[in-house]
Each structure stands twice: as C-alpha cells, then as structure tokens.
Image (cartoon, rainbow, N blue to C red):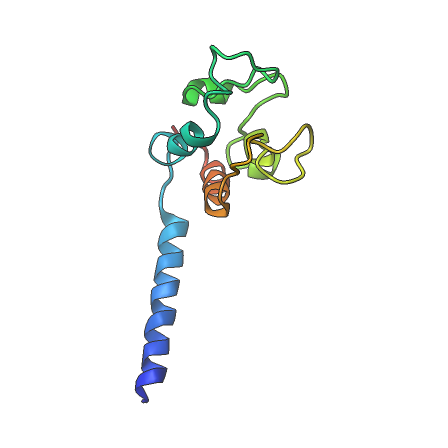
Length: 122
C-alpha cells in the first residue's frame, strides 16, 4: 500500500473518530452553554436589566422559565426552542440575537442546538 494512500486512511479514521466523539459528548448548561451565554447574551438578559422579552439568562433556572414569548428551551426540540431559533439569521419573531455586531460562531450555535437536542440538562 502506498504511503499517501495509507495516510489518507489514517486521516479519514481520525475525522470519523472526532465526529463520533463530538456527537456522543454529553453537554451541560454549566459546562458548555453558560460560557457562551455569558459571552454573548449578558448583560442584556440579566434579570436586573430592562429587557422587553422578559427572558433572563442569569442562570439555568431563569433561562428554563422562558420569557414573554414563551419557553426559551424545549428539551430535545431545538427547532421549536426560541433560544436556538433567535440565533438564526431569520428568527420566527423579532431580530436575530445577539443584537450586537458580534454574532455567535457556527460551532457555538451548533453547541446550543446539540445541548437542546440532548435534553437541555443543567
């Protein structure tokens, strides 16, 4: 077997291993999602801030309560969860979040999607 062909097989195996690990990693709010929320969603969505949506993201419990537009997270249903939908370029209501120019990276949006899909655990 040629060395280049063998290295291609090794690379393919590494990609498949990395993909399967990311799909099976159990995500939690505290470990995985909260750092993203802190970076992009706060201070606008702090309970002490005036927020027309009444969606507060200070912690998991407040995020779980939802806001004026209903539940923010429906466990295992990211495509019905406002928290995920509002990160997309054309959300079902209002404007894409965050409103600042600094938007979440694609892998951060996928992390939110995967966390909700896995059951949105604390």
